[in-house]
Length: 228
Image (cartoon, rainbow, N blue to C red; front, side, top):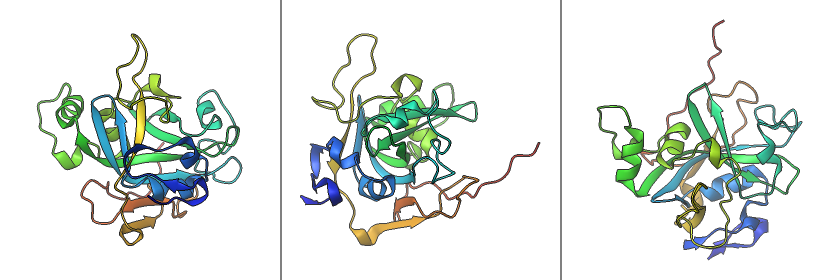
């Protein structure tokens, strides 16, 4: 066990994280998520890079900045649920909701290491392509991570703190359970932070966190305005 902030002790190893773990500000939850293991069906990913987003009216880079909409409604729900959104007309990205219901904050899952189900993840990543994906690239980047874990629009609102084992079979026609296991968090000296990547607003806010030297961490990219 190790201290986990206001939520109390945080379990390590194969014990799932509780909802209380996520009932904190995103920028506190984010570094604590590093080294945890996100499980969905046959694939498990050790989280190596995350990005925190703040509450409405305070963080212009957050999807909740201007308040609740049909698209971001899950972000205003209880903590410990997935907020999955579609971006650039081609990619899904997954966040975990933080803070109590009604607030609107979360952590973007940016990258990770596939630690089980690698062949399943590789099949998902290479669907329709005749190429081999290196192990370090299976979940290196938020869109790749979502593909490796098979997160799509139907998983928006999925509870990652459910009763029962993560990865258990789902009832017919319903998304399978997901969960976040305690894993093996890095020491504080191995955690780095810096500006969030690719955002146009509040770009210097140092709420991107990653494990130093981990090969699955995605490269930093500053925002480049689109040409009209």
